Image (cartoon, rainbow, N blue to C red; front, side, top):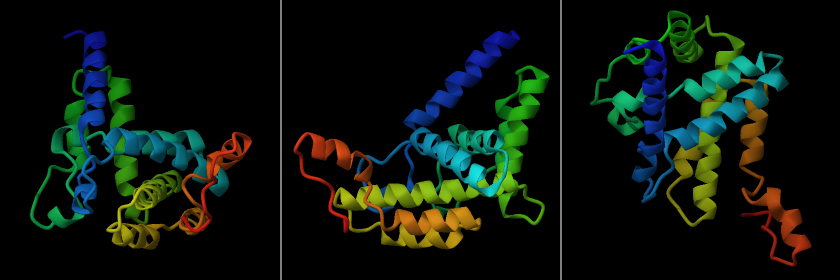
Length: 203
């Protein structure tokens, strides 16, 4: 396979994340949970935002967030309840296999992103990795809030555990705010303009 074909194959594999469900939400009774790709998109956005506020490199942090779950095309999304029983190959080792055949420089970039994100809980973690990890947790918290507003009553443990996992000062502030701000607040002004009901603050 030539290098261009290998890049296209890699992109097709990345697209598979659009079909991999976030398995943990099924434990909360969500029948059609978000995909890993949907999760990763907002992680990238949040990582960028947190990094700007923390004085880190936002482009790097966003790239970490965007790529952080790429190995799940091959190992799936194992929810926390299963991690005590299911052993999966190290994410960096999976990434090495995923980029086989890519141009060397590109392959090294992708593996470095996965490795850096995976290091986020270590003392050697970069600030960008910490921002990306916090973004991962806050995205989950926000998704839980969205499911709660939609009527799911079982997501409380997800919210609590995500709040406790956040480490940066910006992340802590955003996690606190995300528990108070209604998910639909961003379009309240549009609703008012069209005479539609607005989101109640307690939602």
